[in-house]
Image (cartoon, rainbow over all chains, first blue to last red):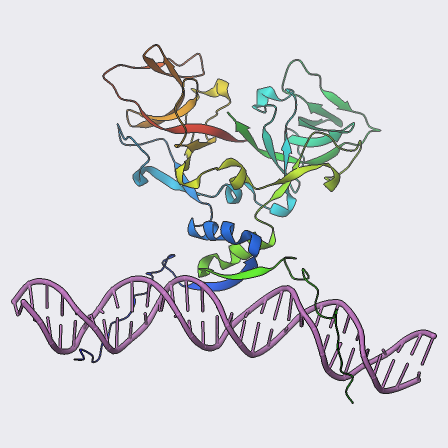
Length: 171
Length: 171
DNA sequence: CATATTGATAAAAGTACATTATTCTAGAAT
DNA sequence: ATTCTAGAATAATGTACTTTTATCAATATG
């Protein structure tokens, strides 16, 4: 026997889907489907960032002390078109906290001011040094007493690839 | 007048689309459509990684010396579910290259072996220290002579949130 | 009266299809 | 023989439609 009749107000409520918001069908390369679904599901590779304070004796990360959600790429890379990475070799910048095998984030849209740490091409090698630019003199300064500054004479041209914005160090 | 007949070999060739590969329609949250299309179009936030060698006098980044394409999130985060970030306060680990305001990448799925740099909750503060674990003794060791080790007595429990895998430093 | 059942309803999710874009060639035009 | 072109072929694309899932409320049941 039917139990039918009007059912105003019935129906699946809004926001009960996987994403709690309306979705749209878009077309993406097959090879990226998995990563994109993961990307969408995790809210864009965002992970929690904790600050300094937590409840005393708190045994595990708690939402209460989150400073925010962070996406590394979004946070570190302001203009993908002008950003690249460089792997560090050598110890010449050790006192600036730049170690061998670290990865540097380099932005070539920034201006090479005096005092900036720059990536420069010198004699077939990429090198990272602090730029000295005073009274018409240009030097590439290491931050390690065992290395000597590189003087750029008035005849030479210095090819600066970009400005180092971040250092990624593996412990 | 008809010019019909067989046209074997005709037709739009494969791989002539935006992505040079077959695509699939997937459903994603409306708010992320733009970012995901950008993500898909740029091949997943991958940027070039350069090694040490370049052509002498090479004035700008060239494809010839790329070591590979790198996606930060992919490279640094192995398991998003067990990874989080911590912002550093204080100078206690300065000799390990960990400075105030650096961001640490922390994995809580790794084991807290002796010698690892860990994130621990001590007296309502998150702290980063090197873990000392020998002959039944447990200590949190700073890497700065002006700080003292924190001894963990047999009665006390140490809440280790995770193991530091990377340090992100802003120059 | 409290609870269980089930059709009504509507959003979400996935997919098929119509449309668009691109290239190729048989035949017409020169 | 050579060039031109309409239409044939086929992949790419975006969206409409179908299927699935989730919730509600009217009614029956105990």
